[in-house]
Length: 264
Image (cartoon, rainbow, N blue to C red; front, top):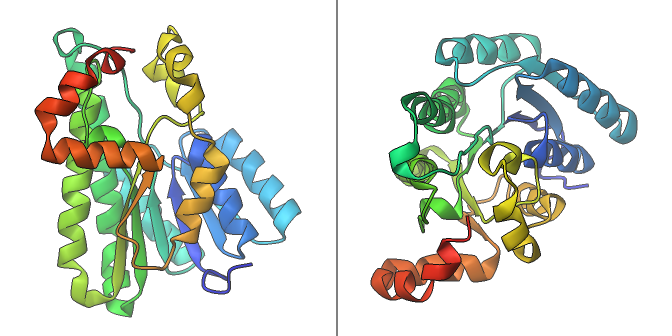
């Protein structure tokens, strides 16, 4: 058990599957109290029951579709009234569709920005006043390596994650004197159901199978960083190094990575 996290209230968006679910489980292992948010209430209920039974900690859940911006503040106020002040927010809800920019529909573009960017920002705004008042809190935004190194067929998704990184980096500086931590998590491909939507044909998953991250290990690293001044978590390390090199020599990286980038 991590004494630093014991009894901290941790809100996790997109908690009904994938790394959101794994983060909730890891939080419970460390003695924190996870609060699960997602659209699929039946999944949240199941996960909540399993966490409470296995780890003997409270695990509440609330239905929330972060695409419905007008509902976010309502749900967060309800959490404050019924459970207490939120210590940590993990903005995990998000999705992607791998497609050429010319083929992206207006509805797809709008939905990705509403969920990945606007929902994340609105959720953050919902918890900040109390965090600032208490001078305690941690905002963890799940971005992506795609936010640092965009590749073909992910132009809209990459644009949303670029936006998340820009927001996260600016927010960190805004909150520097408020004793509130802000962390960006930039994973590469994770073995989750994210690709059920992003890669319907399954070709991308086949091509990168050997490099896919274990969601349990990703969750462990995220929870380990909670309530610490960790600026970024880049996974896997070699991919994080690649994105850093890209910032310095973009033309060179695009040249040598050309074929690999087209594996979608």
